Amino acid sequence: MDEPAPTPKLPPARERVGPINACLAALYPEFEGLNHNGPFQLLVAVILSAQCTDKRVNTITPALFARFPTARDIAECDIAELEQLIKPSGFYKNKAKNIRACCVGMVTRFGGEVPGTLDDLVTLPGIGRKTANVILGHAFETPGVTVDTHVGRLARRLGLTRHRNPVKVEFALLEIVPQEERLHFSGRLIMHGRKVCLARKPRCETCAIADLCPKIGVKGLAAKRRRKGRKSASPKSASQKTVSKTRRSAD
Ligand code: SF4
Image (tube, rainbow, N blue to C red; front, side):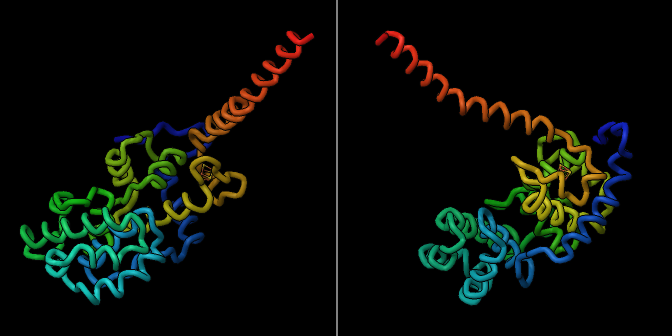
């Protein structure tokens, strides 16, 4: 069990996770999500959402699914046409390749359907645990904990785990987050990571869950920024030194 030791002032992670989730639920009653109708559409939308906002993906998918309504349609499609349809999502060549390969996998091994288990899902090209958990949570109602960069960072800062490996973070959170809250807990952490607990400059002063957070690693971050600031200032002083040396030799 990966539960960090309690800090002197705060209860252990297992006791804090409920109040943290409740606070975040009040903050983010409706977070953006991917529009979809069934597991196949969700799987494609999740692949499109890499490096792209949900909002933009939602503008692309209606035309995409009108043209290619099933996995078989995409598996047999002209990749250039698929690329054009998904172009606004960015990295469209790679995404088109992954989506088609994934659909070929579904057609050849799963009868054209999205498999409903984590073990089967991760065998499809382009589907990692993170994507698989999103699909299981939203389309099959068997919620795992989705661990992306925001969830991992917040889980560590909040003292919910010490792990850096996303799979280990996932297992640590599975132990302390109740099943019915898992899916939304991930979504709320992601929103909080995007809006408040930013990677380089967390806004702890205005954070609604500051009282529940040991802010692990945050102090170190400020020191790191100060060191970086000093470093970037040092070439200037080096050149000033050079100038004064030149001046000295001119003198
Ligand atoms: S208090 Fe700071 S470190 Fe903790 S969740 Fe809020 S912003 Fe992140």
